[in-house]
Amino acid sequence: MENNGDDALMADGLDRGQVPGGQAELLRVPFGNNLPIKVPDGPPDDRYVYLSDVLPTAWQAVEYAAVPEGGTVTVLGLGPIGDMATRIAQHRGAGQVIGVDLIDERLARAGMHGVTCLDVRQHGKDLAEAVRDLTDGRGTDAVIDAVGMEAHGAPFTKAAQWVTGLLPDAVAQPLMEHAGVDRLGALHAGIELVRRGGTLSISGVYCGAASPMPLLTMFDKQIQVRMGQANVWRWVEDILPLLTDEDPLGVDTFKTHAMPLEDASKAYAMFQAKEDGMIKTLLKPGG
Image (cartoon, rainbow, N blue to C red; front, side):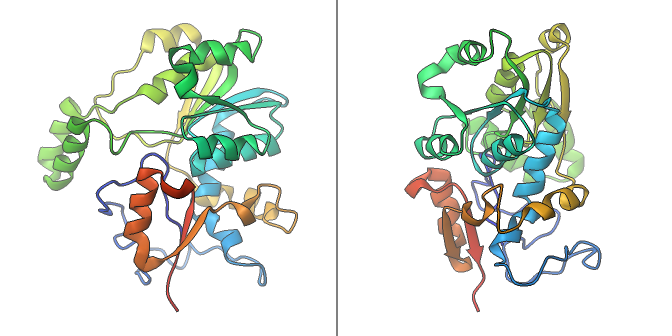
């Protein structure tokens, strides 16, 4: 069972997904006769648990990015999804993968498998210039936004998300249409970093319904944008053959922590606080 989350981690511990109890040991799953994936007997379960989220989400992000053979891609955010996206991009033939983050452990981890890492704290407003310096002044062929909304960002944003989650749909929808604005720093950075005619792939989740976008810039640069929730079953046949002892994507060593299910609240708090080098945690139900 995964501790799912990149920077869009649920900060208050409330599960507002379609299936309540996603961190429980037992739950009733709609369409349970169709959703399970048959995996080979023998290898450890840890190898396949990422099929539930990290692998298909990252695979779709790279697929949507449409990086040409030998081409270039920038991945914004090197949490679990972004880190795996860099590995998949390399596996699928990208010539140069640039990773952007501001957490030392994430940057070091990505750098260990050949990613050119840029630290936001060092480059700041010069990030676009740094990427262009690495790509002959063009920008990368594609950008993957693996950051999404900042779940524990501005107080107003957090309060608006919390309040609308408690309101009836008929009341919440008009409120979000006028007040639901996400912090879009990563998304706007992706628009700036991608080359003209390039592709922006968005796997990070945004929830605002009134998000302002620089449409003039997007139109002028002729950017293609692809996004959406991961279509898990769509990519299983592509991914499953890679979960072998050769382990080309490094799934056997992908987790940084393993904790018992009863420590889930502690794990989420540690992840949000970026403690103890936590990047990916597996929560293990008791016997």
